[in-house]
Length: 315
Image 1 (cartoon, rainbow, N blue to C red):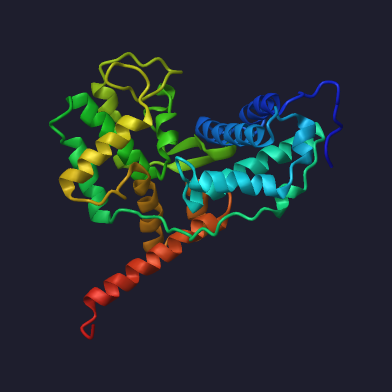
Image 2 (image 1 turned 120 degrees about the vertical axis):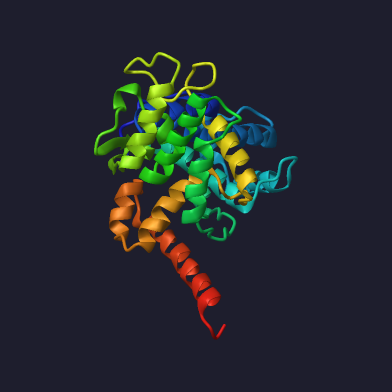
């Protein structure tokens, strides 16, 4: 049941409502900064398009009057404009628009059933693209011995990548660790997407990699500040990690799919290949739905078939 709406207190325009919606996502839904940026950009684009399309500012009353044709016109614009979106990106944009209009309905009493009539583009499901066990080991070894960066930065990069592969963390989760989290214990409490908390078991190799970084980090690390630091001492962001991964995979001759996130995929796929239970992998990854984790079964099956074709004497 929708909450009672104080019509005198609600914003008058869609742009003002968008600001309130983003605040709701941040503080009540605990959405990640990346989600806020992505959703905010999509809905800002939608509002700007509709205002130009209608020739007037978009009020809340105007949001209720929008027709399915208006939303389809926006999707067509995003598909063929100066920066055309892929089917997957269009599907994401439509999901963001639906989330915004659900907020308008449930929180502000602005109903619009037309958006439900709009179907998104067909998106071919993609499988995770993990690196192999040998490639994962090579990447970690290369990071730990990279002579192109200072010794402390080598130890930092090796620690971050080892966390991704050894604990199945997202890069944002690894970089959100605080100094007080280390030295690592037997388990590491991680807050993932949507504020979902899980305990990631910590292997000795992961503890050793983080300890090696701590021993060499040249910057002071107060307990409540980020554990991993950039070259000038500020918090380490994802871009330097992604750039270093690109350099490492170039040296090793690995494909562009060998990204930091591919190490998380490898964590799941290699556990599954070794006989781990799918439900346990779901918990370790912090997936809200088992269907998300089930994608790894297809990856593992493809790997088994490839090995079969390479090894069977009749092939």
